[in-house]
Length: 50
Image (cartoon, rainbow, N blue to C red; front, side, top):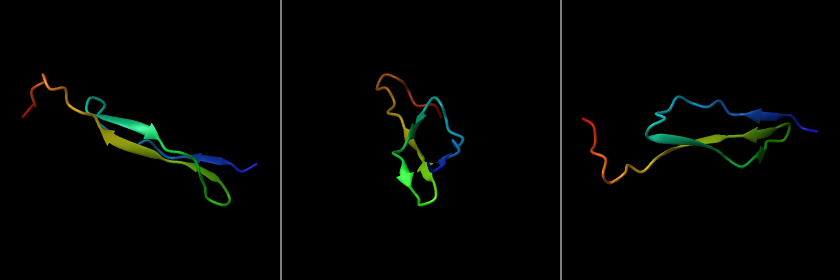
């Protein structure tokens, strides 16, 4: 059985972004589980902060 390696979760803005786990990748000697940081849509009734 191959070991599973998980990506480190980067710093992100929890109010404006979300982190999702990507599908596993077979990298030969291990299985890699990456992450993706995505911006969340801003609600239309919420004003932007300056």
